[in-house]
Image 1 (tube, each protein chain N blue to C red):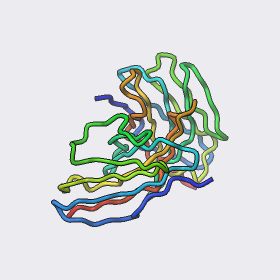
Image 2: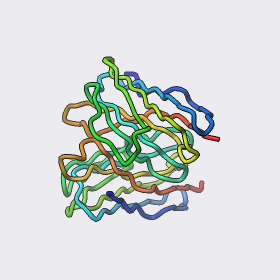
Image 3: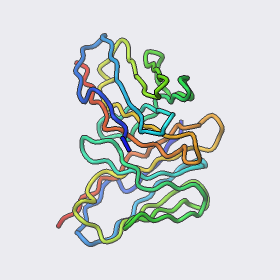
Image 4: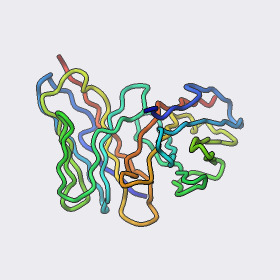
Length: 114
Length: 114
């Protein structure tokens, strides 16, 4: 089945630093989504991307849909302690049979030290 | 606007038993997807319901079944529970409009199979 490789697996940073994480696939995706999950909670949608090359911001978060349609990137600027959590990329593979079937990466665990 | 709700929050069952999990979609959303999230992993797509019919299925056996009701709420049923079914079960809702790929998650049901 589809596989998404998300990296890094974990990050330990100081408050105020910028963060970058990415997600790659061996096949083409039509949609990329980025979610954040706190312990004991469901994932919360941060950013949705629909076009190759698209760059979208949500506050201090910026995500890009790679031009090859096989990757996506998420950047967090000036991190704060509440950014702590697990960040997941998710994508919708190209192809008519994949309607609604999001494929998720393994997650990036972010720890922010005050 | 009411978000996605799930019940129960936690559940403990024994191997071989059957379980029913419930989900109410976000207001205005007519599509419900179910995911299984094992500890330390990203969510795995189980199936999606639209207009009360299954609209796509992941790699899960037939003992995982579901229903969608006229008010768009949904149930996930799992028969003959196995130890490996222990996981967080997430429900996500979306609309059938232009942003149909943007799935919004509930808090999940934590299922433990002993």
